[in-house]
Image (tube, rainbow, N blue to C red; front, side):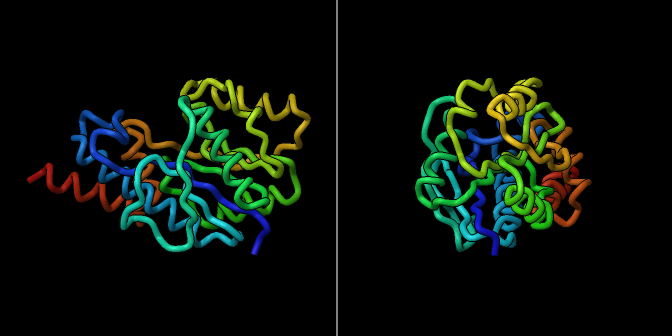
Length: 214
């Protein structure tokens, strides 16, 4: 068991409030179903990772999609940079352990990838997982500092480069993870489902397609 914690930052999968960039072509209900499937894939991957603690920083309320073994904390802040910084701060205040944070947009993530991130963080100050859209899918900090994230403009092609520059300017030794694709728009959904054909996300997408073809 590694002396670290993994934090998942996520929204409750409610129609009209999650994955709104998937609509159209998907309906709000379909987008919420895909979000729920992605969240379940992510949480179950975290549950199978060898860490001391697992935390869900949640906007909304937990549901039947949440497996056991997670501590749920509320998200705080207005912009995403504030919410990420608060998730790091609150989780580290709760459990004095290094923090690895991921979102709910990479249902193809595996326990093996997360175990690798945990191992890297034991030997480095930070671990960084770039996303193909220019952001990042994973960020780990051995000594979490909210100032490393506050003020970083999120959801831009330059977000990842800006965040990585912040880490280097702080003098941190940064280890790198493989690049992954986020699910933001419809084409992403089909691409990620093809990468993880046995996932709950791929199954949910297949059901939606089957219903639409009738």
